[in-house]
Image (cartoon, rainbow, N blue to C red; front, top):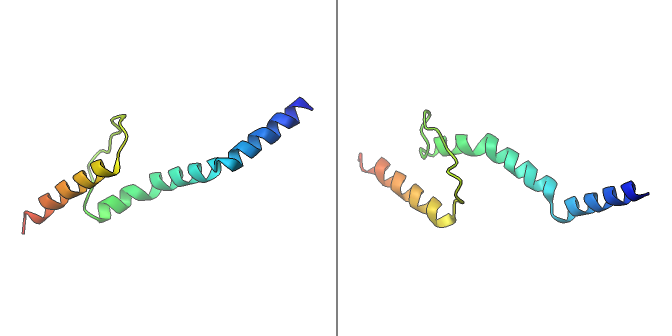
Length: 76
């Protein structure tokens, strides 16, 4: 009886916190974001994306995009 109660609690927790959706999103991110960055010219083919262990905030992302866009447009 204890096992089924814990399983029910675990299932409720997973549903309440949308864990399955988060895992699905992360899987999609791994598969689709890098090609999208390459398409936008924000990541080169041979560039190795390393996780430095720091969170990427919206401000950091914007700064990096702006920096790379300036590099791209400086050629024109």
